[in-house]
Image 1 (cartoon, rainbow, N blue to C red):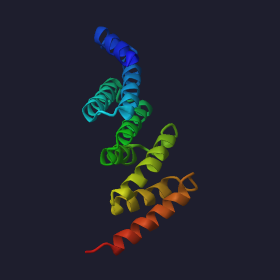
Image 2 (image 1 turned 180 degrees about the horizontal axis):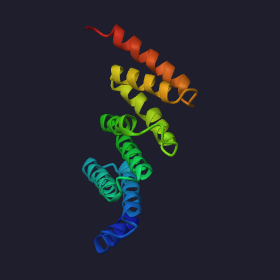
Image 3 (image 1 turned 30 degrees about the vertical axis):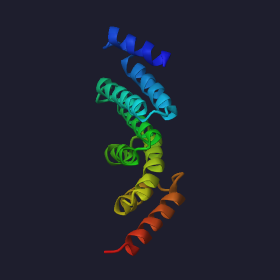
Length: 168
């Protein structure tokens, strides 16, 4: 908590510092780690709220042209939501990366794959079967022979089976 307080103070004194993005990311990680360990539900919610707020502030300071940093921050937001246990928001954060990040950009491909590997199992768990199928097909098209190809095939099959056997 001392680190979080120190970063809060630094950001209050220098809100537009060159280190604003990184300071907010560190603050977010710190608050999320504290929130994950917190037993009091209200304090836990407040810590995760601070973490997400810090990541959103970081995102505001990332240049629109810095797609790599924007994607990194979006992925960290997904990780914070997942740590919080908010699977729908974690899945949505991953989905934003999958939908709006250019797989043709070599500097972003690793982040897209990470978002795919994190988001699709969450979507499967949340019974978003059409989304799983769409993402798996898109992944296999954009990442032929990618590291998650076998999982994409498996997840797509599970989603199709679950969707087709669900009561209409």
